[in-house]
Amino acid sequence: MPTIHDVAKHAGVTPTTVSRVLNNRGYISDKTRKKVYSSMEHLNYQPNEIARSLKNKQSNIIGLIVPDVSHPFFAAFASQIEYYAYENGMKVLLCNSHLDPVKEKEYIDMMRGNRVDGIIMSSHTLETEQYQNVQSPIVTFDRQIGDIPYISSDNYMGGKLATELLIKQGCRKIAHICGNLQLNLLANERSKAFLNVVNVHNVEHIVIETDTNVFHNQEYQKMIRQLLADHPDLDGVFATSDIIAAYVIKECIELGIKVPEQIKVIGYDDVSIAPWITPSLTTIRQPIEDIGKLAIKLLSQQINKEEYVIKNQLDVELIERASTL
Image (cartoon, rainbow, N blue to C red; front, side, top):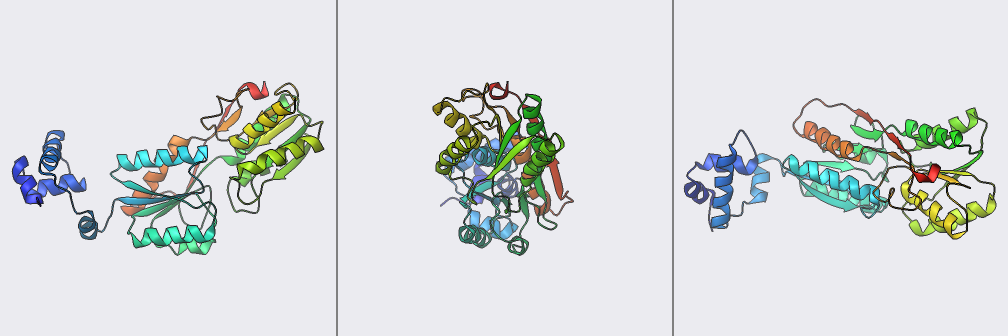
């Protein structure tokens, strides 16, 4: 079995240089880096990752826990995390919690046991104390927990922009479909903004909360159909996810309700399907690429014991499409 010394000899460099290439430490020219990797491939050299992590006290692996990676928003979120992690010499261990607190805790314990360098949390089923007891660098998305650095979009502004657009377009009875407001999420600010705006403008409104598991798409059809049956005079819907908004449009089409002529619909996130559905979906865009990049930056700053900012709020953007014209 070839060793690091064999690689160094074949590449015409020192073992220290090979080690620096493997650990991505210090300046190494592209020419030297290519020579080392070429020699590793030629000799079929496989570095001992466990030994390296014990020696360096870093595994260069981070954990990412999401509610459900099949959800378009979290699929895009995970993709950006993986991209920027790789750019920074890290690999990602991805876990789906499915909003199960037992499963989420088991994944956290597994990550600690496997010496991940840090964890990015976008599933928040566990109680606050359990996050604070992790004793590893953590970045949370859309939840504020003590002095743990967190990232969110400007949820209040997003809710305000969405609601004001519907009112501007003439809606006088608006339904707001959101997640369970009992969960301690910063996304609840979207609902707070909705209520503030409709009350200021004296607009009739309904708030519909989904159950705790906001990813049970099968329940949306039944819930939305009941909403449309109970409120035939409804002329606007603000859904706090594009998936829910897409189901609203689908149900309207099946019931012969014209969008946007009879009901105007706006979603949230600007996931990949938003411009593809018919009519194309007006939505609030979250800066998913910036969120992913910042999450890796905040985690790296903690790992390297650098200064970091706890509150990180990013701007949103109103994207107008056919569903509200």
